[in-house]
Length: 146
Image (cartoon, rainbow, N blue to C red; front, side, top):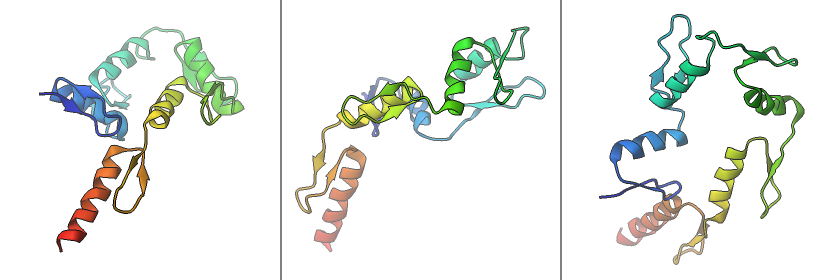
């Protein structure tokens, strides 16, 4: 039986995979780096593993931001970080022209933008997210049954 994400209507074939995905929509970070003195938390074990491979826990040389001193393990990570100081937003939505510093944020925005609206037949309110639409429909059903 498939499992579906209510936010993006993405389908998963395992409940565990859906659970891991749902953490991307929350602030839940149940996985912690166990290296002494670190304590950083992450949304998945694979993120902890990436952290361990590319972090200061290794002898990996770091690159420092000239603006704030924060350290990064790759030039690409530093480049993305520098945008927080410059307000550069090179990724733009073709539908509404809203811009983003990170490509992943544009991708999320596009998923929301491309979702067709669901219109409530009772009150005419339109929703882009199916979960909000279904809550509205249930609200009308509750009112009509009382």
